[in-house]
Length: 130
Image (cartoon, rainbow, N blue to C red; front, side):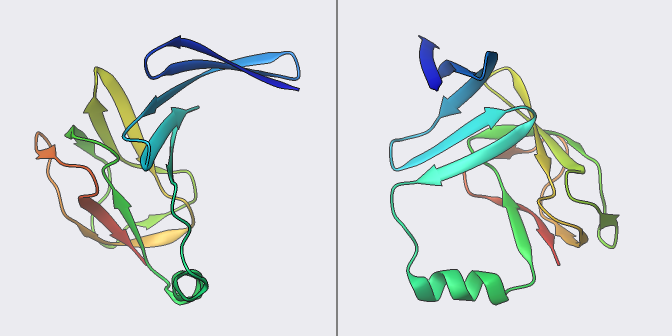
């Protein structure tokens, strides 16, 4: 059984199997993001169409975007770098937290569209992978 307890705005304690974790949640109801265990998860209330799902599967590239307004603290890769699933590519700072953006699969960095110290807005593409 899973139990979720609100600690304060945007901060929740999730208890499951006698284990407790803290999860940070932000964003409007139609475009939420959660920060847990060093990873960022995004969710929307709209489901993609079946053709959009097929198109996503066929595309070989990925784009990492900013989940919220943030400052780029560190860019840890450059175009041409090979990355493994889980590698940290960029570290953002938002709401006094460091938010690492990690590769969701093995890939090659195609381009970097930000620089250290830059303020980025939500959904801004920061890294393209192929």
